[in-house]
Image 1 (cartoon, rainbow, N blue to C red):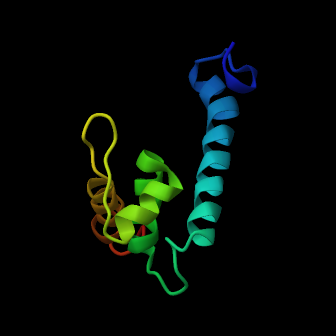
Image 2: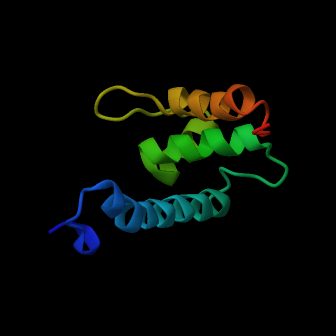
Length: 101
């Protein structure tokens, strides 16, 4: 039995069990990034997305270090900077600067 009692790995199980856990995890990272200064007032959507992506890989502390020049990578050598770039790309290119239209 997995975290929070998850057993169902079907699409329905993922939607009802895993997605709320991922939402909670993402909200927790966002709050931590605001608190530790990685996300600043006035940051554009792409900067926030980059910080969030970096935090997904390295945690809020790693995202802070990445933003302020110390960098960091995971056990496979994937860098926080590469995740920042992916987050920014998602906003600037895939969504045309945040617009889904």
